[in-house]
Length: 359
Figure 1 (spheres, rainbow, N blue to C red):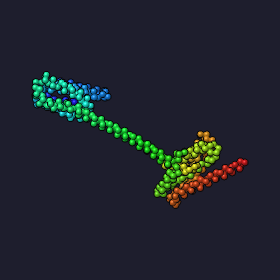
Figure 2: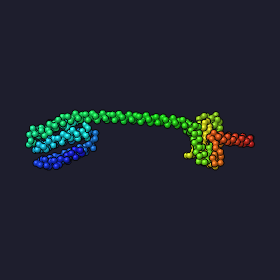
Figure 3: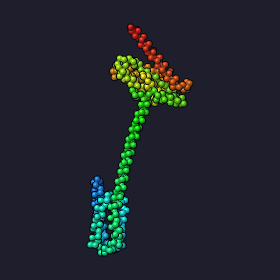
Figure 4: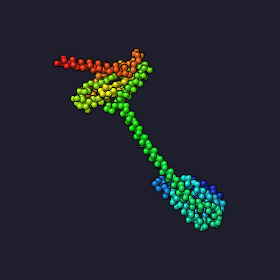
């Protein structure tokens, strides 16, 4: 497309400077424009071989230049013709074309070999006129053009290699950074979660509890917690094996996670104890959460046919900053723990009394 634009700029030059041959020159120029369009088409069809296609167009252009120069019968016009082409070879072509010195030399050979013979054969001017009309400058340009092409191509290759090396280095750094981020996330997860249940661990859960308690006190909003203890875990471990005991812990963990909902948090305090924090939950809401938790566990046991018992004891505490004095996390957990053990003892006494009556 660059060649087509450059060829079109010579319309007035041909008409005024070469009046006897401007029709012939434009016939050749239209043919050359067709060759350029063919090169564009071939480049789109076969982009893997751009240098050969461009060389085909360059040779055709140089042959047309030889023919056009021979049609000029004015020394000044011939000077403009030669100087403009030499400038194109030195400035315009290196600005948009990057290829090796072999291709540049191959494109220049038609001018070097045929320019003087064609000029001597067809031009009305003398060979001495050609020398003084920029011919010597043009031939010098054609001789040094391969060296310029080689320098530009070498620089381009080094630039590409450096860019590829930099891209490879950046890709390696990104990969290492991604690995470090993955390891960091894994370490953070392991530091904040219980590996058996995937629930937040004691430290992370208590930090969340402390923050929720501060927010509850500041906005004067209720807060409830459920202290959950797994009943008869030792019996399950002794009778069914520790694998089933771990399964029991996981079942309860899934249940307390559901009870916490989206706004709350359930964490494993350790062993068979869990804590459920319910921000904004009043006493009735915490009672419903505890009831639903126990019902879900029993429904799942029946649905899956679990052989071992899935029983829990729950200690509930609701703190209302409007009606109650300030408390801390340890106070609320201690109250919930005491209520949980009272419920556990009451259930044991009830079970023992039932056994006595049955006996």
